[in-house]
Length: 397
Image 1 (tube, helix red, strand yellow):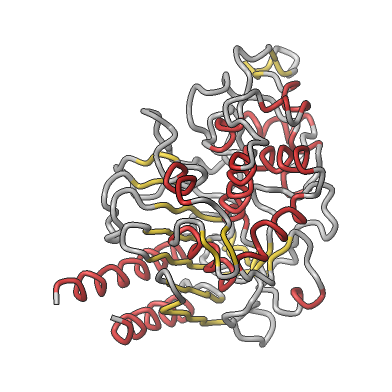
Image 2: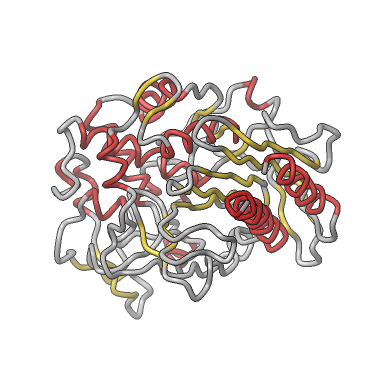
C-alpha cells in the first residue's frame, strides 16, 4: 500500500497547491500504530515569501487543541482528582456565575436567568454546556458587536465569561467548553495548562515543538495564515494568537508541528501508550471513544462571521455523535473511514481522523480562513479517500 498511496497522496497535495483556486501550502501525514507511513508537504509557508512548506513547519492548530486538553482531563479522572459529573464550579467557581440568555429587551440589553442545572465537566467535554462562539452564533456575535464581549482569540479570562444559550445538558452546541476544561485542569493542578500538557502529555509522547507560546525558533518555521477572498485569491495575514496569553486556551491555543500531532494520534491508536511512556489507561481510552452524547447529535456549524467561518458540516446526512473529546462518525464515511472512528478540525482548515479499528490516523493541515474552505476541504477528503482506497485494495489482496 505504501508506494501506491504515496504517489496518490503526493498528487493530491501537488494538485491543491497548483489549482485555481489553490491553497498556499499544505502538510499531510498518515500513521499506523508504530510510525508515520506517509508525510508530505507542498507549496509555500506564506505566499509573499519564498520559504517552501516543510514537514516541520509550525501551524496554529486551533481546535485540534481540544482533544489534547481532553486527554489531560481524562488523566485527572484517572487520578481520582476530577469527577466528570460533579458541578464544574467545584473546580472553577467562575463557571457557576454564567447565566442563560433568553434574548434582548427593547433597549438591547441581554435578558438573563439562572440555569436550571449546574454545568459538569462531562458537559464541557461533550459540548452540551450551553456555550458557543461568536463566529457561529448570532447571539454571541451581537454581544461582541454591541456589548464588547471579547473574542476568544484575545485569550483573556473575560472572553470566557459569556452567557449560556440554553440550560446545560439540553443539546450539542460547539463553543468554549474546552477552554473551561483548561481552567479546571489549572485549578486542580495549581499549574498553567501548558506546563501540565508538557509534563503529562508531550514528554511521554516525545512532542518537542508544541506550545501555547511561540518561541523564536518556532516562529522561524511558522506557516502564515491566509484569507480567502471572494474571487478565490489568497491574501497573507499577519495573524498570531497572543504571544503571552493571559489564559492558555485549551480549546484552540496551541501551535505545533503535524509530526508532533501524529505522536498524539498514535497514543490514541495504542490504547494510551506513547513513545516514552503511558499517557492514559487502556480502559480510559475505550471509555472515552464511546458516544457520550446519548441520543443527541452533532449539528452543522453556521457561519456568522464570513471572514472566519463558512457554513460547514462533516459528512452531511450522516449521524455524528461526540466522544471525550472527538466527533464520532456513526456511519461509514464517504471517504471509507469506518463507523465509530474519531476526528475533528481546526479553524484554519486543519483536519484529522483516528481509526482505532484499523489502526490508522491522518492529519491535513493548511492555514486558511474562513473555516470550511472548499479547496482545502475537498483536498483533505480526496487525501483520506485515497488512503482508504489503497487500504481496501491491500486487504482484498
